[in-house]
Length: 261
Image (cartoon, rainbow, N blue to C red; front, top):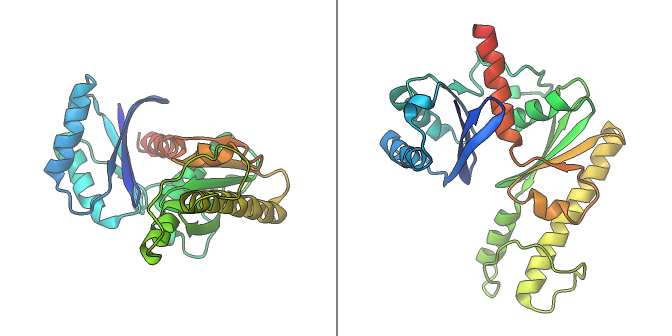
């Protein structure tokens, strides 16, 4: 099985894939001070709980936007799973797509991996909205090339900023609205509605502007933990793909494995 590791600024997702199927998926908070042994104790316990052994892992692929964790995660794969991981961003790793931006090395690994996964299956211009620590909009050309995009503050960052900067505003969670009425009747409801409908308006406005640049037939995909919550209240999102990054990692691993073979 293939071990995929997707390191975001907030969470790290480990998944076991058998061919195209995600067999298991586990999430942990991202911390740049974890040791190799900490990672192994955590993941080996979860694997054992679900009936898997480290020996079932035959390959690994890693994408990280946190440079400090690449070394211990690479050592985790080599020391305990006995395979050298494919690390997205290494010069010898072929993504299989053209990256048409001024400085390709500055693009987050997750954004490129998402572009690979989306462009492989859809032969249209694509907008990918990823709801992570930051909310990103990425553009994939009809020929599969990555064209760049937008980076906006993530919704949870905005909520944390409201709570920290305003003494009387509480810490709240993002929730799906119970109705389409946007006027809040309490401070908490005003915050929840303001953040939710404000972000939805931003999404719709940016999608319209991006479609004006790249064509009205551009398909819009959404991924990340909050994607489904926002997709329910807009017709601007064509499809929610929860595991887009994991599928992109699998595709890149298979591409480079076939070339090595």
